[in-house]
Length: 128
Image (cartoon, rainbow, N blue to C red; front, side, top):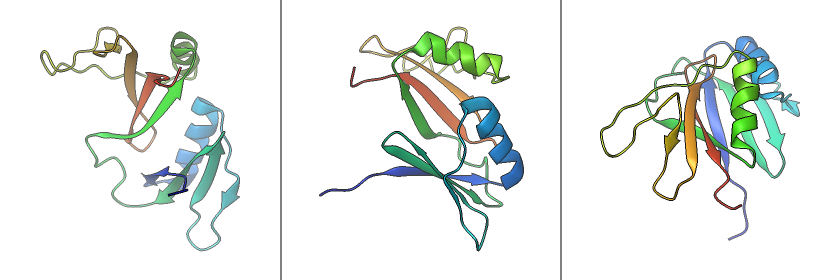
């Protein structure tokens, strides 16, 4: 198969979400849907949609992940933009320290919430 996959993220307040993504991740939509105001983003070969929904923030798992080459730099940039990283303690399976979990392969991951309560993951790029 030849296709791209992208995340679909709900937003209870699409204007607030747009402002958060612009401020925190530095991205702007490439297109706005004329019918419901959904926002379409492209970042490299990846994309995501922010769409109006009353169910924003109800997913308790990671909704989308950001794979980065410079993990420390990305965390610092996000913190400077006001992003707060989550702390998790799932025993031996997963535990964060100062917002960072070291995975079994040694790569680091961290999680944060967007303005709508969607959980986003930040990971050292597994393809590097």
